[in-house]
Amino acid sequence: DSITPMATHTSAATPATAVPPTATAEGETHEADAAAAEDVPLPRHSVAILAEIKRAQLAHGLRYADFLRYRHYCTRRIRRICKYIRLLHGRHRYQKRNLTPGMLTTQRGLMLPLYYAERAWSYGMQLRDDNTKGDARMRYHMIRRFRKAAFWGQKLHQFTLTCGDEATQKEARAYSAWQQGVFAFIRALWTEAFGLLLEARHLYAELGGGVPGPYQERVDELDQTFLRICLHNAPQLASPATAQVSAASSAAPVPISFEVEKPKQTTKAAAPKPVRAPKAEPKRMRVRKDPRTVVVEPPQPCKPLVFDIASNHLVFPSLETRKAKKGIFQSISNLFSWGGR
Image 1 (tube, rainbow, N blue to C red):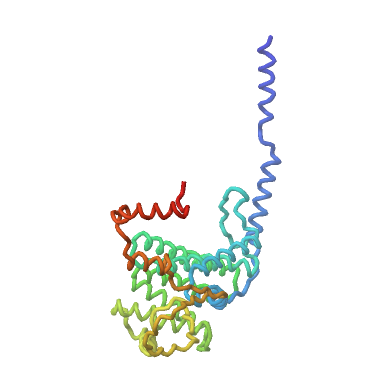
Image 2: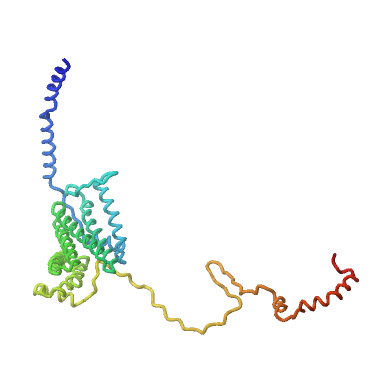
């Protein structure tokens, strides 16, 4: 009798586990809404990429080649942008969230991949400057940072194809080519680096139009440093198309500079002071300290002068002489009651 009700309960519960038809319909509805949201065209934004990074670099350390300070600034800026676009990675435990074009609906959000690339680039430059002993592990870390900077430069170009206007797309393409060219330049791949940097040079020249400004400064930097070194290490790259680059690099040769401006010297060199004869040591020496004056007296002898004279110049009678004369002194002392008890 106890087995029959259990079988009946199991058979009655079996159809209850089936998925109702409404659940499938709701799932299809959510998928259709997500697909429709992806098909909605995103707004186009205009971002002056080179002007933005120039302003940030000169204001946060790169004027004096302080790449650590600039990297910390990029980290803080990334945090603020992530909070603005609500791209948070969990409260207690890290949860990875990939960056998608649907999150970059504002001009400020479009700067997020740019500062990701700038942070990785500044870290690579910092490691390059710190690796003075040629440490292989530090060089490997540096190459990884430049690889990451090139990756985010490509991501920026991809995002601007859906979220940026035509000028922003061209500038993002130039920035991506520049980051990839620097990555190849660091690894001494001269042919690959020359092709990418030459592409970035042409794009920046089109954007600048020959007018003095940040675009023309980037063109001059590419001509006088990167492209010149690539042509020096790979002479087979020289061609009539690169004749303009060779002429520009030989006209005003400058050393390599990665977005660094050295501080100007505003103080004049101090004139050499005349050599004076040493003075005699004064009786009282003064050690001057701010804000007080400490007076140091000359050293004094431990004993008075009388003790020194008595110990060095006076002759005391010997012990035998004193014993021989003890009787006379004793009688005189008894006479005048000077003796002790």
